[in-house]
Image (tube, rainbow, N blue to C red; front, top):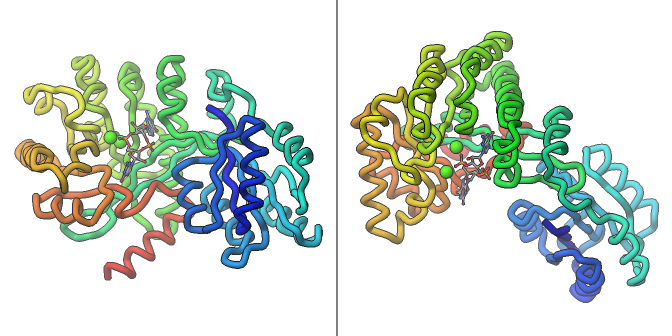
Length: 384
Ligand code: C2E
Ligand code: CA
Ligand code: CA
């Protein structure tokens, strides 16, 4: 993983100058002058480093800092300006107070040598995603869930959130689960990771309850978590201690994980169900399960994998598959949930097919827990 530098500056010539110097220092670089494009890149491209021009005609560097703070960005940020250094220092303090990692200020005009030195000194270490770093991150609370809403297609109400884990790395920015969950599984740290996610989700539910928000939260379990007999008891104790009803939590288990070792999995999943937790079968359609097994396992919900959902508007075959899965879910008395809904078109197709709930960028991206109440208010005012 190389260092990724995102630059926002309204002067294209200056941005190009920064690009050249940074590329020579081994950075991958994207530049933009648009705040909208900046937000998109910051979310989708996950830069490890950011340079912000403080004064631009169409954007305000302070707004951008506020946005990054809201996203819990862990990128290394440089603030740059041709302004009086006091303004730069004030912005720096503001960013730091909001929890951003402001590593330096750059004063325009900037010489290539000076910029190169700063960039060289701030390279991230290679290979940050190591087993010991992950263990430390778990211990230090740098592993935290983001929450993505799930919306009921009959009532059009948000019915819950899926907790999706992120590693908020001090210097590398937000690391997505694909980059560390497999390592956690391979190194025997997946139980600690799942425990950390579950503990945070449970206390989040309890915090939302105190704000009058009764939220369902779905937690992903890895197949490896289904080896440990004590799982159900541990999770149950966690809920009791926090005063959170078990019925507010759904565990999502992939089709492949649930079928890998059917007897053991059946035992643990059944125990979770008996305790009152709900169960969902995740990524449905990507593995293979016999109808008999599917029927025997005590699932409440079937989540249709996004690869089928996303093709729905273009492919008749995908529509047939999705429709069949929805019917299968209903025949087995499960609710059908579609993940990865990115467009209004797909949303309407799913509603027409009798799908029960949807999740996806068309509704909302996974978000930091702090902005959930605001999102809920906005949603209810738009759909009142
Ligand atoms: P998943 O359980 O299938 O989660 C759905 C993934 O789709 C998430 O990716 C989510 O951000 C993404 N997504 C949501 N809506 C859309 C959309 O409209 N379009 C597209 N293209 N993608 C969308 P994410 O957060 O990167 O998670 C990836 C996978 O990592 C998850 O897939 C899950 O298998 C695993 N994972 C996430 N959190 C945990 C966790 O706490 N424990 C374990 N064991 N695995 C986790
Ligand atoms: Ca899932
Ligand atoms: Ca999936």
